[in-house]
Image: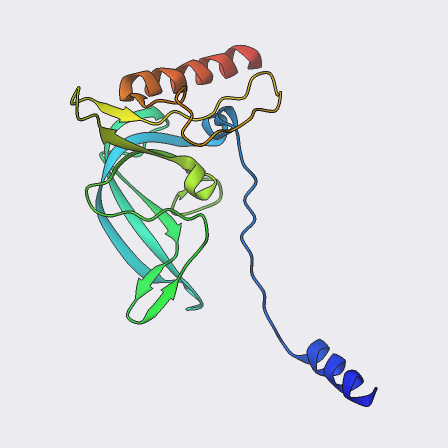
Length: 185
């Protein structure tokens, strides 16, 4: 009994910091409407830096802007992603995307209350762009759009969810922005 009491006291008094990543899935409408900046671009640089308190590292990603679908930040935009590697120290945040120079994507960024923008919902705010080998067109795997708030069954490899041309994806984003603007009026 005394051993248990000592173990409980030690457990209660030991200064332990626990951290967790909790990510609530957002539907595409929420991602579009909540992002302050939506930009298609190509990653031109990544730089890993210590946080101010030197407890974790962040990666600063610089993107050469191609097309802005919402907001504007100039010819290039820099944003912060949690995690990265400095020397032998690696900080991993589950759900945080990794980027390399040359990656192309449509980025949904938040600027609210921050010096440097961040990606909406970690990996939820990145839609990777690739080139279709047959057509040589840039394509994006489309997001899931909820239908009138009803639950949807998600099937891995669903043939209905085929990559769409980048222009079609951009038109979907513009359509949702226009729909939101109409509902506000």
